[in-house]
Length: 216
Image 1: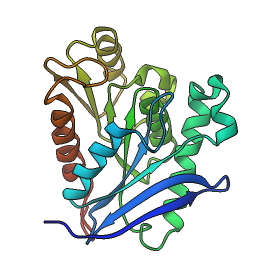
Image 2 (image 1 turned 90 degrees about the vertical axis):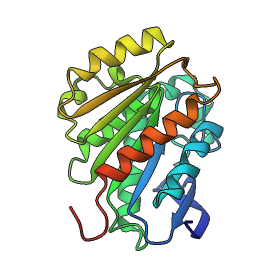
Image 3 (image 1 turned 60 degrees about the vertical axis):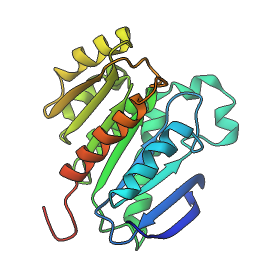
């Protein structure tokens, strides 16, 4: 059983964006979360995923992508370049933290946050080793999709029809990707057992794609 060595509130980047950092013993990687529109580092679904990743030996960072003032303007919630810049800022911040700087990085994006994660992955090809999208909108990443080199897992609910079709179209532009469709799930994976399936898929993906210390 994994023993957590640190749970702490952190301030990320020059804007000191609020974050919750959790590091297990001997982490094999760090997963940064990019939440969807209208959400924050307190997202219960992302927190549920993060707990499972911790159990698999992955450090996690749940963070706000906007300041309080920025979040009041709904246009910022859908400003993918702005959100992606904040994810890149978090990647840079992690690179300067002694406890994190040697860890390979994975990105977990939900809804519009998935587009921000993919744009950030395209901008940081040497540092981002894997991406997972949960009910995401990769189509909003635009031309950046073709520049994403990190292996990308797209997880979509079978009953989330429009988003599923958008993911199928976007997958054609990704160089390394897999699309997993969760039976019986709608957009928020609220149906019994569906979010647990997301957790299993994401944890397996990161465990396989993020090399351990001294490997890869």
